[in-house]
Image (cartoon, rainbow, N blue to C red):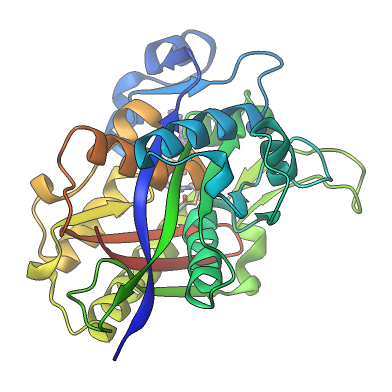
Length: 325
Ligand code: ACO
């Protein structure tokens, strides 16, 4: 049976220049490099410069992904930006990115699923491609979480960073088996009963402010371990695969201990996990495409590799994507 798959043909990323180490945070907060590293695996985070917007980060990653794919903006008819930190309430950050790239056709919109945003955006774009509605899609995760952090709250501000990553999708014919290149499956979940565990205390309809991030860290941790195990099982089962068939796990980079728990579930050793958390911290929707861009750029992920993406975030939302590179 011939099917249309969305093949990932390019990736790119961008990190703002300014980098803040744990030691610098410890100078102004009651915390330490040892506490942050041992609880989270984070060593430093990048922070956008004054006036540097989410759309600026997104545009840089998108240009690099297009170059990597050897495509031009003329080839793009869909721009999806996953972000929880848009430039403005509206228009969508994707519209600004589209304008920055001088693209005047197709459609552009944002997807908001916080840290699961990239997996959600990838699933949406994959559906467009499979239905023949897009012949070239830019899927971007971009965040400036530094703008919504309470820098006095040591329980949250040490965890996050700014950055962006992007992939380009193109249709490719496959035979409907796991041997095809491209996105083999996506699974998305949400359970809004847990919306108060991780949220921002502002918004246009609530109090007309951007607000700051608030989190019940322990509860998020517990749910993440359970939900991600479920997402991983589902992805393996639907594709008739086992953990041994997966060449690379590219997890959302929230906490090293959450990642290790998921890897254990898959029976995966550290060499098969793409880890960026030590250098990037949690960049929310940007973390997976940033990690993908690094691991394809340095030759770890190669054509034909089986790559499993998984993420969990505010909402709660969670999900996975199985991709043959
Ligand atoms: N430095 C030093 N001490 C700290 C810090 C800090 N940065 N932050 C909190 N503490 C203290 C607390 O005040 C508390 O002190 P107390 O015992 O005197 O009251 C103590 O450390 C323990 O606090 P807990 O919050 O219980 O610490 P825990 O071991 O749960 O670790 C953490 C906190 C790292 C936030 C953990 O719960 C976690 O990683 N949760 C997942 C959250 C996450 O990843 N969120 C990202 C968004 S969702 C996602 O992407 C999956």
